[in-house]
Amino acid sequence: MARACQASLSRLGTSFLDLYLLHWPVPNSQFSDVVEGFEQLRAAGKIKTWGVSNFNGDQMEDLFRIPDGNRCATTRRRHQQQGLGSHCSLSGVGKAFDVHRME
Image (cartoon, rainbow, N blue to C red; front, side, top):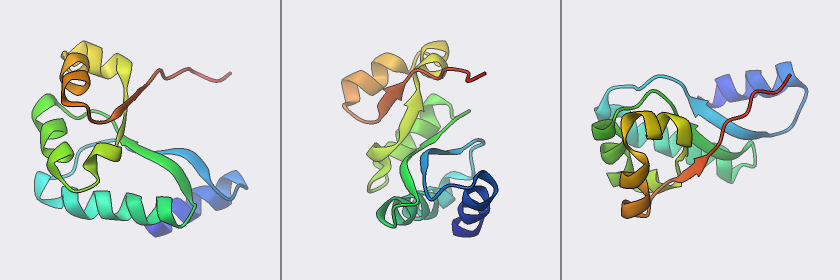
């Protein structure tokens, strides 16, 4: 993950990313490693925040049970489509962001 992030930073010509996403879920057994990797990048100042996409409700709940999993940024639109918005609000975990296309 650190190599992939550094490659992205180099390609983009920047020293940090505002948001770094895991686009597709990994097996739940790897969630701890993913969160740890994201948190190491955040602590190193390489990313401001991290998030996931294409996770279903059960995967999000499992992610939020991992230490620091509640630091995950999630897209509001995706959660609304899957009925997760109220779950996240009631659980008090995660942050919701509107995703805007930059042109």
